[in-house]
Each structure stands twice: as C-alpha cells, then as structure tokens.
Image 1 (cartoon, rainbow, N blue to C red):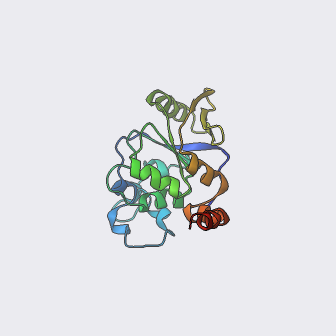
Image 2 (cartoon, rainbow, N blue to C red; image 1 turned 180 degrees about the vertical axis):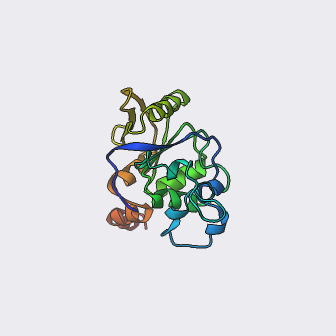
Image 3 (spheres, rainbow, N blue to C red; image 1 turned 90 degrees about the vertical axis):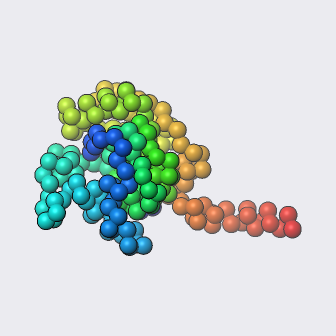
Length: 196
C-alpha cells in the first residue's frame, strides 16, 4: 500500500451520504483479521451485497459507470469507532484519495497512516463536485499534494486543502512512521551522542 503521492488525476466514485461511520465502511464481523490484506473486498459490505451475498446493483460501487481512485463522500466521513480497519478497507479497495467537507479526526489520521489522502473542502465545493459527477460520471478531479490543491476539472474551480507537514512529507516520499525514523537514524544517533 505504500505509494508515493504527487499529483493524482482521476474520475470519482460519489457517495453523497452524511455521517458514514466506520461500521458502515467495514462491518464489525470482519475485524478479526490483523493483516491488512483482503479488507478492500469488504468495503461497504452491507451496502454492496444483500444477505444472500448478491450484488446490490444500485449501490454506487457496483455501478460500472463510476470508477477511479477518488472517493467523494458526504460530511462527517469516518465517524464512530476508531477502527483502523476502515482505512485498510478504503486503501485495499484502491482509493488513494477521499474528499469530504469534514472527517472524524481519528479516521482522518488512520487514512493518512495507510497512504490514503483525506482532502477537506468547503461544503459548496463538495456540492458542486457531486453535481459535476452526477452530470458526467467521467468528470475528473486533480489532487495536487505538493501545492495542496484540489481541482474540479469540469468547472475549473480549485480549493486549497490543509495537511500536516510531517504527513505530507511521508506521503510524498512513500514513508510510514517507521520508515521515517529509519531515514533519520543517523541524525537520531548523532543527537543521542551529543546529549548523553
């Protein structure tokens, strides 16, 4: 799942629902595993499949009209419990970016730790983006991490988004927290020697 971020341009999967919690993202019955592999197939499991395991055709992830590596979600995405498995499922499905007007803090950090970029936009920008995708499912969005901008290519409108400088560095270089420490091992050892 470790992938370097720079500029991502993609079509989007729209999920215009508010207050999507982590139990909806990955139901509790799938939390027994401790390995990140395989969670993507159960992303939004109870919305994608009926109780007999049949595809629910009108759910957006089952609609072949929509695709791409950007999920556009309604306000308050990732609320509820702090399960990291929700971020594993989003990354495992293939999403690289989630755009919303508000994320639950713990889920937002879990996404960042799993190389998924959560992009916070205004409610107006989000509404226009949903409209653009509804009017044309081939609408592309450009997410420029170096410049911290997101652009609706259908309208040309852009917004700036915030990201912690440390997390930005890690995403752009494909580093998790341990990789970052190893990258700075010599500096850490030098500091320890000087401060004995």
